[in-house]
Structures are given as structure tokens and as C-alpha cells.
Image (cartoon, rainbow, N blue to C red; front, side):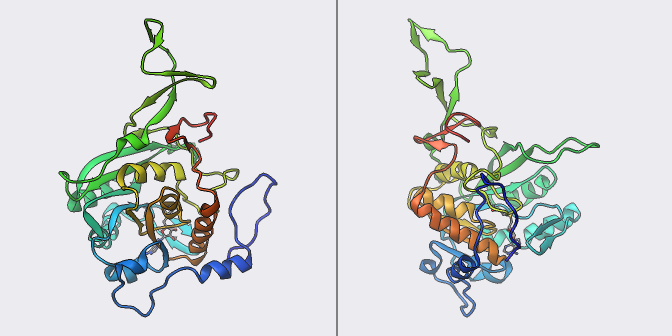
Length: 315
Ligand SMILES: C[S@@+](CC[C@H](N)C(=O)[O-])C[C@H]1O[C@@H](n2cnc3c(N)ncnc32)[C@H](O)[C@@H]1O
């Protein structure tokens, strides 16, 4: 377990006591003894394992949706395991060493999202095109990140979207509409045209594009925050799940980290399964799953719509 840090009073970062660490450690699945793992054994579980040791034992074609947020091609310490940045070709070899096995876990009508930054995006595009039909690349404009004196500060990430069968896949755009402030409210015969007047202001519901500028990186005062160095926002994962996994379907994340994918799947009534090699991260995931039992809210997603960043319905 990592050492306890001093935190400000309003800091809501999720941490573990020693008792919780041992309690949640007992909740994760390890499948140490088993060769093949049956579909019903992995439903709603956090698997504590190195992906390479378990991926070929998982049931084929079990997932409706796979969300992959792998280590990017950067040197980064994940609680003691340091992923080392390498050449583009070496990173591509790394992706090729697990990506096809993960795609084999996707249902024939399933969808997959793969995250990265500008530096690794070309390698991501390669593996996506080798294994799936690519339908889009979403750009997420992030706010966090250190500035640099000799380069442009990195303010975006990519999320590649692919499917196994471009003629048969689930996509429900109605569930991911955005509620935006109307800047120039146009009226026809004195009535709002395609927007509504409310006591909070004038709003329009719009269909989302592949440019996402309404999502903040989790930070210390947000209830979803953990100390994971690359935690994804629940709001971002909620869009992927609502659009690309039917209610009751199964969402799989092979690099689960602090558990965001599983937690959001649970909050939205989907089944989930995730793999993570670090036990403390698995325990954060399990604690967040337990918290989701009494609070299924997702910051920035209320009343069935996604609100703008920093709007009244906080994002
Ligand atoms: C980019 S992070 C994912 C963060 C996650 N999306 C979240 O919201 O917290 C990648 C994660 O993969 C884990 N990881 C890296 N290599 C792994 C492997 N071979 N098997 C299982 N987990 C691995 C790391 O420990 C890290 O937590």
C-alpha cells in the first residue's frame, strides 16, 4: 500500500485504510489455478493479473464493448511498475503482442475504443486498422497537463473507435446528447427555434461530434478522484458506454487502473469485467464499485443529458 499523504479538508480523493485494503484484496479474482475461465465467472469482477498471463484463458466473444486505455508510449510509473517509452516500432510491437487477443473477446457485433495521445496515435491507428473497421477518431480536449517552455502544451487525447462488423453494431446516439447554452437564441413567430427557455438559462440539445471539449480530468475535489496517475473521467467513459453498449450488456477493460470503466458500467446498468496488475489499483476499483451502490451519479451527466464543462450541473 502506498504511504498516506497529508490532504486539504475539501480533498475528496478516494483512499484506503489498511482494513479496507485487506477487505477489498479478498474481493478481487485471481484465477490462479484455472486453465480456461468460464463466461459466468468473470461477470462483474476485477481480475488482479498481468494481462499477458490471463488473456488467452478468457472466454471468446463475451464482450459487447471493450474500452482500452493502455500505457501510452511514455515513461510512467504505475505504483512501482514503470512503463518505458520506446521507439514507435517497438511500441507498435507491444500493441501487437496483445491487441488481437483482446479483439477475440469482442462479440461479432461489438465495438471497441482505444485511447492514446498524439505521440502514440499512429501506432494505435495501425493496430486498429489491422484488426477492426475503424469508424472514427474522437478528440478529447483535456484541460490538465504541464506547460512546456520549448514545446506546445499537450491539451488533447485521441480515442479510436472501431467495430468488428460495420453493418451490424450497436450505436445509440439519443443517449449521449449534449445540453449547451444558446449564444444567439433565434425565434420564429416569437417562439424559440430548436432551443428551450428555462430558469437556468437558454439551452439547446445537440448531437455530439467527435470533438469533446466538455470533460475535465478528475481532480482532488471531485468525488471520483483517486491517486491513479492517469485516471479517466467518469463522464468520458459514460459517453462511450451509453452510445456503444446496450443496457444489460457487458463492458470489458483490460487495463482497468482505478476502475473507471467498471464503475461507470455499474452506474449505468451494464455488466463489467476488468483486468489490472496492481493490487492497490484493484482495491480502489472495488471500493469505488461499493460506493456506486449508494451513489450512482456521474458528474456532468444529469437528467439523461451531458452538460457543458463548468455548467451549473457541474462537469
Ligand atoms: C492508462 S492506465 C488506465 C487508467 C484507467 N483508465 C483509469 O481510469 O484509472 C493503464 C493501467 O494498466 C495497468 N497495466 C499495465 N500493464 C499491464 C498488464 N500487462 N496487465 C495488467 N495491467 C496492466 C497499469 O497498472 C495501469 O493502471
